[in-house]
Image 1 (cartoon, protein in one colour):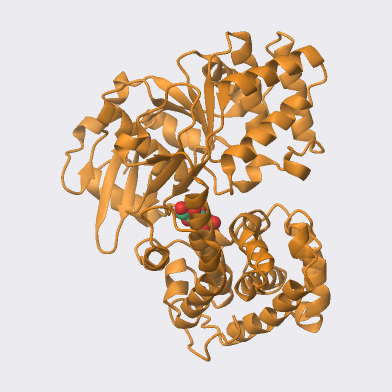
Image 2: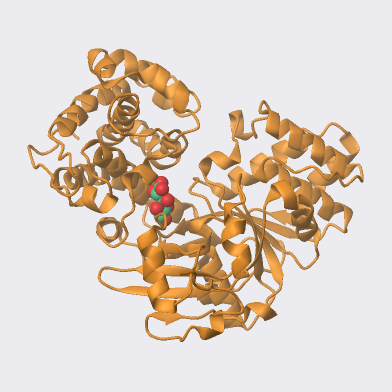
Length: 521
Ligand code: CS2
């Protein structure tokens, strides 16, 4: 039997109830004011919801979103037949609620829709670009610049140069920042209206990082007149506020889609899943108009850094630790990993031993309470967030979530044993991915990492040599960490702790083996 899909034509059949909420603004009346790069599950579960709430609270109809997909057109195929409508299945402990969101008004795949994205970026009624392209999507090279050694970045640079020369080449841009800068070049040609670029990725200092990468791309433009004009426009009229984003949004499963179908009677191919908790802290530094996100519960502040640091270092670092150790001990989900007493103990040890001492609590936040809330959120059994999903892209994630803590601890004269455990867990995961264990290493540096780590047996035979080779990877480890003999020794010691934990591993999700506590973390 085929059922009808969620769309503007069918949404009227869905009755609002305690368990089902309908769009808070009429999608038919909503015009586009934002271009979002990376329209995956996280954006749909987070910023798109805040944006709809802000528009509803402020009575505004000009904050619709044009979502730009990544490498494939799969999200276009999910959302286009549904007129941009989708549900957020909010899964608390023992309670589920579905909310249909209408703020995504169009979706574009750069491969076929570059011109539409550029026109929307250049339009005076568009005020913002937001980004969730994940850590690896920023293509960071050395010293805060974009990696101009990559063919796709150089190809995009050539397109930017042609755009600045007054041409409108039909070619697709290959990178999100390349497409964004091309759009800014067109915006400059059309009248240089103010614009704001809002990174919503888990990068420390994401606003300045994005500004630096965008600027480095423009600085590489060869024609000096056009280059300086675009640099002047960036300096005078474009802002890059930093943000801290938080909501756990695991991959959607068939069971989730069936659950949503039972509530609406409509098929939703674009359904996303999320925990009830949601938070957005935004640096209040915009060049032009923005949605009234504060009316939707976002915190607008002059200084995001303390919030960002707390979130990345407490939540994301522990998430990664539990993902690697959890997967190695046979747990499929983060909830199962945090329910494993040994792993919970390890998480608390790294939090209290290394992480909390490096943090200054932002106003109104109690760090111990925040830590406990994070572990409770991880324990939510309804979410089924897989260890494999969180374990991906470790080479990109570790610097942002763990290594800042390591630097701060080293600077304060302490050996970061907890962070060393995190790094040891990651190395052990890489080793396991080369062997019989069913781990797939999903990481842009996978081939390089697997080559230098080798198998679990090789790691056990030569932990010192392996740690030396791993710490030498400049793309991951800052110089101060790379050069620290005490950190190196701590990672070697923690590899043995991980080996013991894995040796005692459950092998089956949920059946944890409780042995000796993690001693020396
Ligand atoms: C996770 C994050 O996949 C991961 O690496 O740590 O996506 C995490 O769920 C979010 O940052 C929560 O806000």
